[in-house]
Length: 113
Image (cartoon, rainbow, N blue to C red; front, side, top):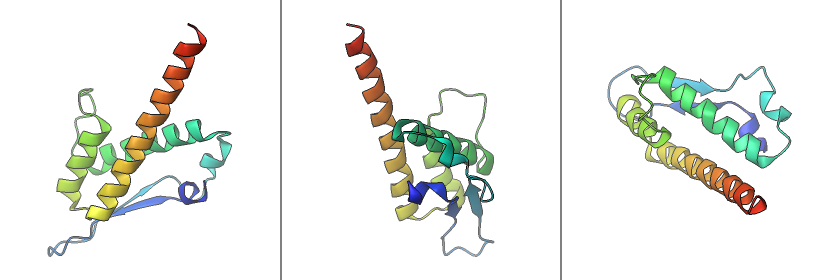
């Protein structure tokens, strides 16, 4: 999990004349990600932290439950002019979280069948 344990920086890489935007996810002085004992918990926690970070960095209605994490990434892409590589990595993380949740739910359903 070494790549996740350090803070994740979301930086505006646009070539437009504006001040750079940097948003840091996670607390650099904390080892909070070390507390998770399995990959499932870790992926879900990182995705929740990403969602919170995007909500804080962008103009997102926090009360609107219809806006999912993929939507928030799209909003961040537009508002922060994030690089394609950053967007690709963020979407990959969301896909991993979805796959983990689907796996856990299907495992629970099979165990109770």
